[in-house]
Length: 106
Image (cartoon, rainbow, N blue to C red; front, side):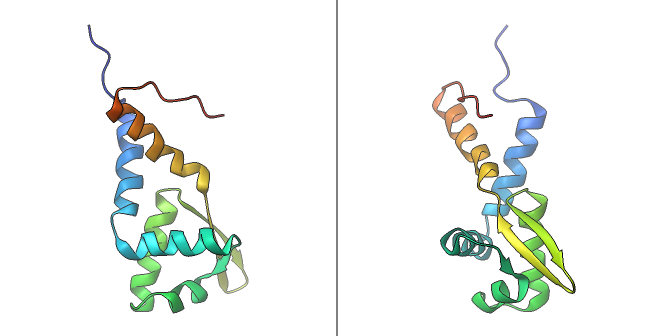
């Protein structure tokens, strides 16, 4: 019997990450966080985007739910930081599509 291509847990991880990456503003947020190489306040992120604050908040929540950013509250502000380890899900998906066994990442 052939082994399934991916478990339900893996498929759920793929869906969450790829959904978060599917919008240009969310990709822009991740690029900005990675280039700054330090956490950013929500207001700083909103200033980068050409959309309303509620839309920015929605994008940040999508990224947080997918595990691509972490959030730390600082008083009334929220500090966002990229979680680069979560991007390993993309690598894992690529390896499955290529027919390779994913490398074990610890």
